Image 1: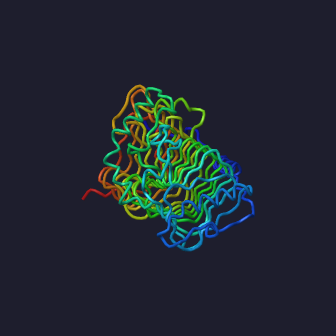
Image 2: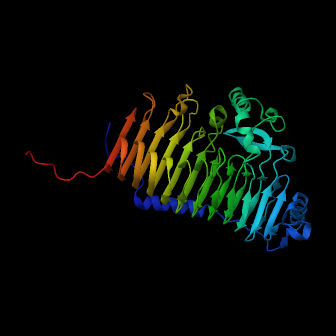
Image 3: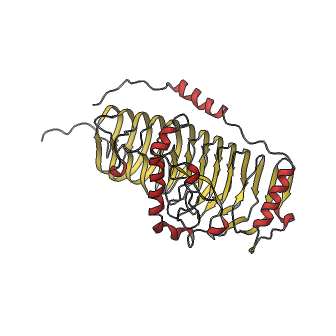
Length: 439
């Protein structure tokens, strides 16, 4: 059914909502005290293991109540994770490279989440939990060094992935979901858990074992001016999970999977955490390059709402530009999504909104509604320009496409099990002019 006139925020209300998101975000307050990791025994020669030097420096700062740890120019081998403290800034000066070792035994098990299920697994390479006022700044590089090491676990992970999902569905106590040594779930590069007032700015992220930046149960987050060169399997750029009040801006993505993926837990466990959806997220002025630009799901069982995307540009081929993916295992909702002024080049599918991801599941249909997409340019869609797939008993509803131009598409539109879909000034292919006359 095609209709118009359903409710959405007015321009004034939308601006007020964005301003409210920004007002809820606080930059970290870091004490003025500063030290250099060199003074604690680190050597930037790419050979000496600097793990103990970083640990000593961070413990010193903890005793001082926090501060900034400077990493001067050089390559610092770190055989094990860096665990953050509150009121702490890790500052990578120009030419500084953190190069992490990849012996799994150097990475102890910590509380984490793996594809939407809480588990204990190898520590992410940079990690912190229950922290306030933390940041990573500068112009250096964080290198996971994973392409020849952790990446080899990808073909071996299936049994552990299925076990984690079984534990989720059966309600296994989290303390008993222990992976780590002897298992093959790759750790994230950077992960903060249940933390607030977070800033990541300026650094380059490379060669992650798994997801690049994963924020789990966090709030008041600013991610800006990051650059990516991360092309391993599952190298999502930014994953937000049960996270709220987030600004993502001026980021240059170039990574091997989703540029931004907004998530909120998987299946039974996610639905049990419905009080903490991912929400209040503003994404602006970003440069997309990778597999997909913006993804919501597939792990989104606690819900995703109030997401604003504006003034972004894609470079190079994307499999999908905008991709919402859920299935009947998930439940939850995706709603109140506003996407405006985004340009894509070549894609397989420009827009793909599906409640039947991988054709999996039963009994827990997700609700997708109130999605507003405007002022979009796309060079081509080798698959389908616009796909929307709901369920007969749980239709995708209240979706508006306004001022959309997809210059070329193999297939135009494929819409099933929907209601209240509104097209205004949508052109797929060349714009038609006046009708030709009979000769």
